[in-house]
Image 1 (cartoon, rainbow, N blue to C red):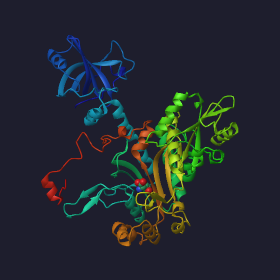
Image 2: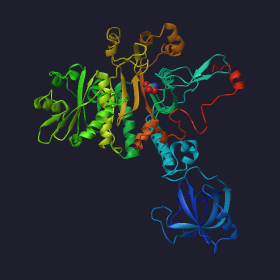
Image 3: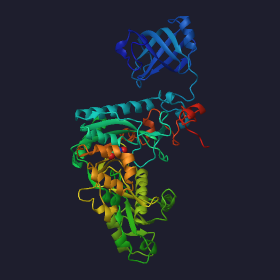
Length: 582
Ligand code: ASP
């Protein structure tokens, strides 16, 4: 038996018991006549003591040669510690070792296995298995497990069945590129890895599995953005015989359950906001509503003077930054530089100080009088002591810019509190989205999303105005889930493919199986998928999803530990009938 107890377990009530422990050497302290070793495993650290008088010479010798991360097994007696350590759960006791077995040696680790390690990101990624020995990383993985168990239990308790769907499939259109896998046995043919199990879960509904979920890997070959992973995990769900309201209720329930179980936070009804309102009020379809700074549109109160910058703009819009009248001129100039950075792309920023005495001082006083500025304050909800920041230009661009500024300021002002949770449903998404590159409309969600009842006709005349039965669940400014009610009528689905520019043949080749299935009694259905990695990170009060993935890829999509992707050898290429054209 390698161990009778783990290293986090022993307390003073175990004193005088003989125990066997196994683990890694965290550190040793050698005074010659006495040696102390901190023994670590997943559960904690226990102090071992070896002393000349009570330990055999042979054991003393092995103990004196132990290095960091050596794997050992010891047997000994639990004794009371002379100097207790109240900061350690096992700090009242130590083990007087009588037997020591060296199970394995270790090279000196390239970084210290401690909460505050000296290892940089890169080296920790390369030796991820060592990083996992550190408390913060291990705790994150355990936390992820706790969340997934809570999800499974909740959904299972609501009659959802977890069904696995295949990974070697045909392209699913979720708006990214597919990762493809060549088929050895079918020359010139390829599987695609699922961007999501979308079509399969819909087929499960046709199959009568009216409540499905799956905690599932999805693969999207996207240009990498910070904190995106080419493979990520979704909590994928689908329900039959439901309307949008049923889905919102069910997954509001799941989210509420998680917040309560995991964070001890009780949340009432989730607020709902239409996509249009979210864009108008926050410039963003995933607003963080833990704080205000709502957009105030200023066209009416700012386009009546000779200020051409505003007069030429499609939208003039501002936010009142609470208490920011205290910003110095220098700080404001820095803020202006910030919005002018290429990543944000604003041409400039107008500001207006709201003084405590009720007067205003703006950067455009030449054009606007106190009365004008008072109306700006009214439109943005500014109070004395606030600073109004105003951007102008093309509606979509300006909204995105001001939204970025709003988030940045909230961050700086400490308004994005990790222990506060503000979920929000954003509903009534547009069905279609204009794509500048291809100069045509694309499905905003995916081509299986159903338009709102009665809106199919609008497709021909005002396609951009058609709203979908599509919804996102937003938590603290992050989209944590998104889904829709699906089309379940074959005719409507083929019209949709047609509208989206699929020829009949293409639609048949790509989605014939779904269209076929729809001929055999497809029930009304809809669903949602949550991004598990992000959800776990947010519940864990952190922003980086990588910290909650056991073996993540870096920002360039590489696994630096196993060194993938990597070339394959000629024989393998030949077997796959592939030729490299490098
Ligand atoms: N398949 C969708 C996605 O991955 C989610 C859904 O519509 O249920 O975003």
